[in-house]
Length: 178
Image (cartoon, rainbow, N blue to C red; front, top):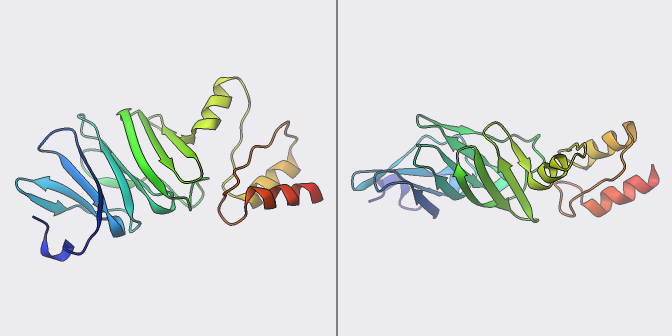
């Protein structure tokens, strides 16, 4: 049963590696863990709505949600893994899955696909280009991208149509004026 103060919380996803380690996530950063027959609220590092959770038998868990929120359970505490400087900040992440704590994927709006390698999150396209021998650079928004493009020579610029604050089309218009 839910604690009385969480009766009005909307839950969005549930996951668990074993029957004794079930995690549910929902609105306002809600993270619930199973303890016996009851769910108990965990201390959440975010107030963003969490939409998906994945747990590994090793004890690690990841949850994703609104505004690019990614939180990680390391077996002892939940911690925030994202910040406003991340390129995916502002986007809703809808799903998370992994094969291990060092190979985790998150998917979201605007065809956003992220991968965690155990040390950092990157957009999958960046991984693929780097693996092919290309030098890559990311920017958290159009203003940062424009500054980098003006400062350095790039052979190709890849921009998402749906970026935070300014669309890819608006960035293209700004580049034409430079």
